[in-house]
Length: 164
Image 1 (cartoon, rainbow, N blue to C red):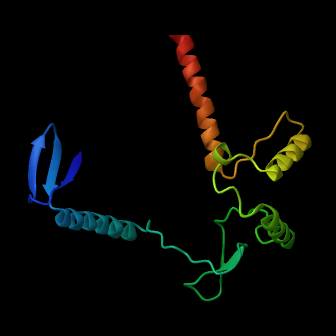
Image 2: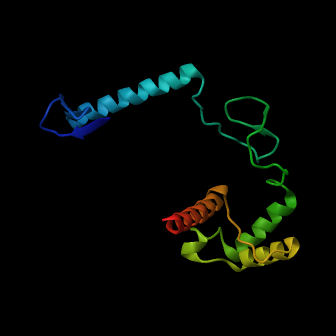
Image 3: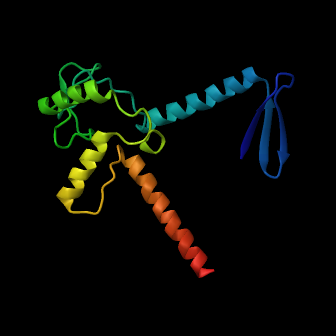
């Protein structure tokens, strides 16, 4: 393990203690060292072909898009636009109408801000359609995974307590 400490009054010195290398150096030397490490890691990623440049998309999400670094169109296999609805005229119109009545969204998660009426309406329609007891919408898989992780952790703790 390497620990870094910045101190304006000391130069680089190394101390070995419990197989941990401790560096104490001035902030400017620490900054230079950090930049050097990052530069080396970026070079390694570029050489390995794992470095990813940001692609600036200049058109709506579709199966073929335009990007700022290339003339013509490129095929877009990485969007979550499986059904091709991101730029569908009816959805764009509905989104514009909803912007007028509800603004640009909750600005936070429902746990903090609450739930808007339009979300409850959609959840009710989905519940009726799927004939389930209830439905909770999550805006991303990250949020849904948070719920699942919490559920499985609680299940694990319950099992552990019962086992002990």
